[in-house]
Length: 205
Image 1 (cartoon, rainbow, N blue to C red):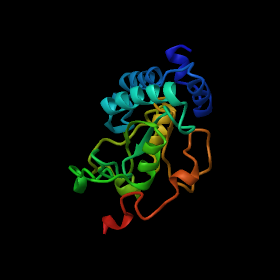
Image 2 (tube, rainbow, N blue to C red; image 1 turned 180 degrees about the horizontal axis):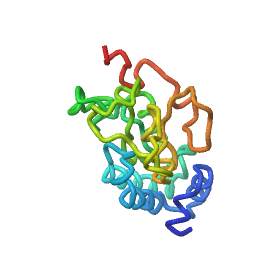
Image 3 (spheres, one colour; image 1 turned 135 degrees about the vertical axis):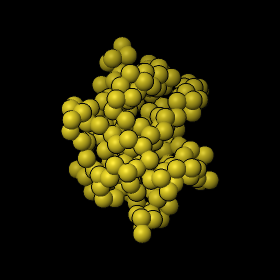
Image 4 (tube, rainbow, N blue to C red; image 1 turned 120 degrees about the horizontal axis):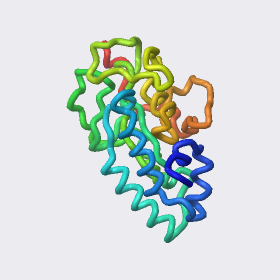
């Protein structure tokens, strides 16, 4: 597949050739990093890009799959996480100036599960402050833009995740659970809320 074609495939369409060793996680990851580099300065869907980590994870995934086959359906699949999901060693701000320098010591449950499944973390995506209320523009980073029309807002606490999917900058991302399922949504049994899953909404109080 060409780089352009890789931007438009689904998780399942990527996972099958990865498992058959016909598609390299390194190649797939680089395709999405190129897409982010080309468009995200305008769309602001990512607040923290983890390109170096993604490349390391992709190389490790490729070696593991060649040696032992895929560990899970998400092995070697690029994804992004909303910036309320705590990620060990990676800044997690909740789009709030209160947490501008917050670097968690541990992964949230969803982040740990995705790391264990050997997915490839591209970065953390924009949200409303603490994923609640808004949109408020007195936030740490610029709000995400609608990739189909930048005069419109992508709306909601999952605005960055939606914009990243809309600009074909990630295969999948985390969204709020109550929204309707879509092909790019992480399975609910992975993202279901637990006590250690995300920054608590009552931090706004």
